[in-house]
Image (cartoon, rainbow, N blue to C red; front, side):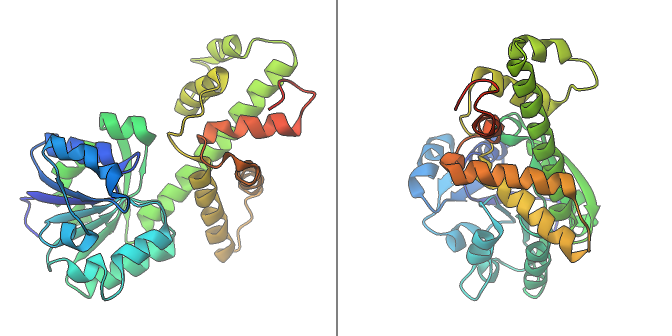
Length: 299
């Protein structure tokens, strides 16, 4: 493809996809969006963004198609097959899968796209809804490095893109990211639960630890959520457990044991099983309270 990207299709306008589409439109790109639930895309119509009735229709004439759907199976269902988006894209276009998907799915989609003369990059992100709105996402890109360079103007609207290797490497890097995030969230939840149980003020404990070795983006943002009891989803727990389970499954294909991650995965799975899967993943502190009904506030 040429360096001149003008038209972009965004498939999936949920928590992440909608603000990303807005940022690209604000940067001067011609943006068309599609969402399985049409009502979720309707608010973008008044912002100079076209709404397509179907995914293939949205992608047909686009220079770049960005996929921000919920899971690997959903991406495969929309993108692959004779009636999928890849089959409807024009040769020379670029497909950028920014969803969190299994490594194997990323490689399979890249292979299917190449057969049609389309470049596919797996480029999942970290930074949540806040990062999507502010354009500060960390973007982990697997695929052709030259094409990553050609899309620098697109990526610049959304955050900081790093080329990490061949097809599948972006998906793999996101799994590593998710293990760090999930483990840190659980550690913060345990620390605040311990502090509260011992009689300390969790809000003051958080304040005291800011700037020390325990400080981090997760500690600042999700620790505050836990203190305030604000579990409106920025990153739903059901997606967190999807990613931790995928990471552990991939590790097993490499004969790796990841004991900390395996326990973290069980904790998030228990949270989902108790009906809290739609809460923010910082809500894992509620699961700890269920496990320790005499050690602090009961859920």
